[in-house]
Image 1 (cartoon, rainbow, N blue to C red):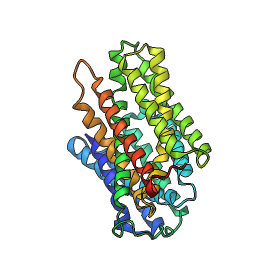
Image 2 (cartoon, one colour):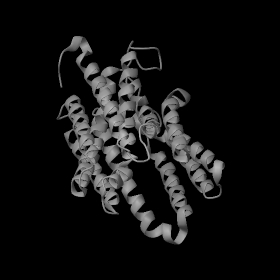
Image 3 (cartoon, rainbow, N blue to C red):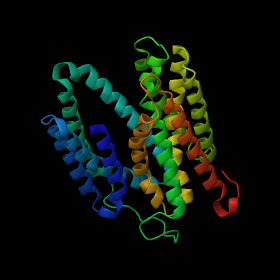
Length: 335
């Protein structure tokens, strides 16, 4: 419950921060958000029950604002897909380092509270790093595509693709352990699968960073989503452990490889880049919706309903991507 509330709060904060804060005082916003997260992570160690859920939900607000800050810098870059890929790669590496460090050095002597104290210290570092960002954003391109401050109609459709893509990913990913168990794998298989997937995510983000601007973002998205749908079919046959591990690694690679290309999709759909600014908010809301929708599609004895749901969401996202790209400027085809 706490995780779901925190994700929802992050999504809404990332979406609403722009209208609330504008494009100035970015350093002050970053420092205040970092310090607020430090205080809330510390407070997490002192509460329990519904208060814990409340504190984590409140923590999602400054977290979402910081995501908005980073997004604002990315969408103004000459190659936003490259910076988006680099951001996702560094984010995954940071997650790996934190999980490994907390697991190895913190959990046994200090328990779960020690993990939140580490996050509090890291939040202070994030706040101090905010002193190094620009004081204000550069202006976004001026267009007549939609009402002032809001994406165009095509921009909202592109955001629906980002929502569906991330809902599909989390609807499946949350059930990896039950899928492994239902496949009859030995204990520890799913842990190895998650580790391989995280390493593959780093590789996927690195490849996306290198190839940004050199490959068609459209075909990168279409082929990646299509490949992931194929992997869902492989998971559905309950494969042997080696195949499950290979499929998990491939899924992680395609997941992070494809994600940065949602940014040029949003920019093409809405050249004002206002839709791209809301992309992380749509993605986070999709991340919180996916597990909930999947919970309605599974049973106690068979969790493969999450795969059917994920395939449907992925196919819908692919259709939106293709529809938007092929109908731009009268439907001329380009990279």
